[in-house]
Image (cartoon, rainbow over all chains, first blue to last red; front, side):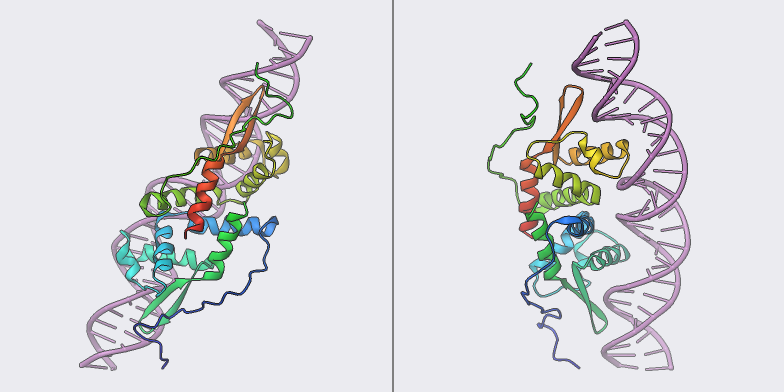
Amino acid sequence: MRQRAETDSCCPPPNAEPDLRPIEGPEADEALAALSKAIAHPARVRIVRLLVRKSSCVCGDIVGELPLAQSTVSQHLKVLKEAGLIRGEVDGPRVCYCIEPRMLRRFKAIVAGL
Amino acid sequence: MRQRAETDSCCPPPNAEPDLRPIEGPEADEALAALSKAIAHPARVRIVRLLVRKSSCVCGDIVGELPLAQSTVSQHLKVLKEAGLIRGEVDGPRVCYCIEPRMLRRFKAIVAGL
DNA sequence: CGGAGTTATCGCAGAAAGACGATGAGGCAG
DNA sequence: CTGCCTCATCGTCTTTCTGCGATAACTCCG
């Protein structure tokens, strides 16, 4: 077993590698559209905010924070995960979600470059 | 008639009033979701890019820039307009669209604040 | 007034999103 | 092994999005 446990965050990748992907052009346009679509729902905005705030990653507690059914929240998490904005790591019987800093940074960069 | 004409941009509001609206909280979350949804389509990203690039506002030329029917482009413009991201001003027989700098700034600010 | 050019709206059809309950899959404790 | 807890997936329904052609509205020019 790993030494990751209670206080230890399950997703600690604070790597600050430079992002070489373009901020403009067709690829960036597609990326912006996809990332925007992923975040284009109040529930998903709240999820992202939760995960950003808690550098330590919350888990199914997200369900408790939202007025939605567990299956619905799971769907939203799936959308965010498929967009690459968050990551889920299995930690025993539960799953620990956290922000994918790279992708969030990319989103911010493209938007800022508008 | 006004002195606005060919080279004159029809939407010249370069006012840089400070935006006092919140960057966080429920209101900002709703705003971010709405703005993201408005831009969450490749065609609409391209439209926004076009209007940002050309500080002078293009018009129905947008239709020529996109591989979509005129009615479809008009729909996308409507979405962006309803989100407050762009503005359309009637200029003779045609309509001149331009970015609404305030709203775009707000979008950038909220995203940057994530 | 009447035609021409430009844009908005309508109606439709197919695709996708959103929400939920029910069910399945997997780990952990006993 | 069995039950429990957590989470993902499935199936369904409703709503919204997306795209288009057709048509209306609107402006300018003769």
